[in-house]
Length: 446
Ligand code: GDP
Ligand code: IMO
Ligand code: MG
Image (tube, rainbow, N blue to C red):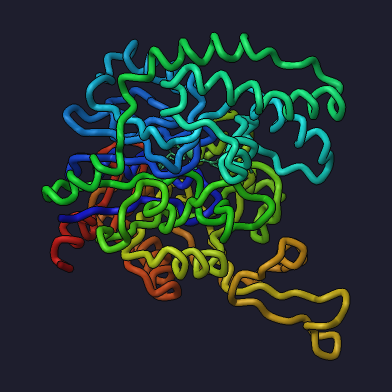
């Protein structure tokens, strides 16, 4: 048995899609455990680009089982469109896709409320993807949500919908001055979705555990990233799910004892889309250059991603929380040609209330501060390393890399005390250096 998690260790968009696609070859099952269609995972296969939102990236490989777990929130229309879009491009989606009956459903009012909450927050907005993710998880936690299995019981679905809409319509009318939503409109729409998606719905907890017990290999595909995790991220500028390793267990019903390896996908620099503090953000032309070279535009919303240097403070936090067994370093090629590369090793912070500064001296953080107010006031302390002038694009062997690129990676690996197992040097599947194959490493460990 070797079951590996692939998750993001920054603010998402680290290149998880590419790494999952690459490792799917050695897996029998690929399973998503949290998030929804706020995710955008890009995979390039033979020069064709696919962007997966809620379907596991493993779908592009024939003969692999793909599971959407109970921790995911599903927008039925978006999922149907994604299935149809893949089928049009000759990707098989049928008996290879399984949806948990326990996964929660995104309703039209969730999407509406997501937008309204953001508008109401004004300059304090989160910068969500507008996909209704937060409100859907709110309903899940307040125990008024619908699960996929509920769509298959039309009578009780309608009764519960009526009850839910009483509250929702009150809010829409009184607070947001919107028109009421009609029960029948949603009911009719969602019953059509139920007809389409019903055949995919199953008890994925039983399924995945049986497969693991039979010795099948599972790849757990994370969405978003550690710094967007509801508990461990830069709250409140986070998403509403557990994007860290713990999310695998709750989001799929798999025991931690069955997880053999955790690969953190780490971009060689940092990006963030949406609002919230980002200490190493580059506000100058270099930030723009990284965006242009790295094609840093959201795969879901098309928004420009904010770019900056690698941040060891937040990465230490991510490594601790996830217990990484290895790292997949991506987009090394984007740093080609820079004279110097900076890495943030700590933050300094001058507390306006002087409670943490001694005699007006700034205090130092080597671990992530707990509040965004402090984090926004932090100044990064950098270590400068030499850049490299030779191209790393498409490199497949360590010996292809310039010495300075190896020094950069050795420095990161030592500073974070984690091994770099994979180095991605381009968008395509074969633009990769395997230092240690994660599945083989997990087997050896046993
Ligand atoms: P995800 O959400 O973590 O799957 O990442 P996204 O797909 O949102 O964004 C990552 C982007 O970087 C995509 O356009 C990928 O095709 C691209 N990408 C992934 N790995 C590499 C790499 O090593 N080099 C370059 N240049 N691009 C990469
Ligand atoms: P992948 O899986 C990057 C960000 C949004 C916003 C915050 C909350 O492609 O890495 P939400 O719509 O989830 O309520 O928005 O989270 N966000 C992402 N940023 N990559 C993602 O997914 C993201 N999913 C959500 O931009 O800041
Ligand atoms: Mg993405």
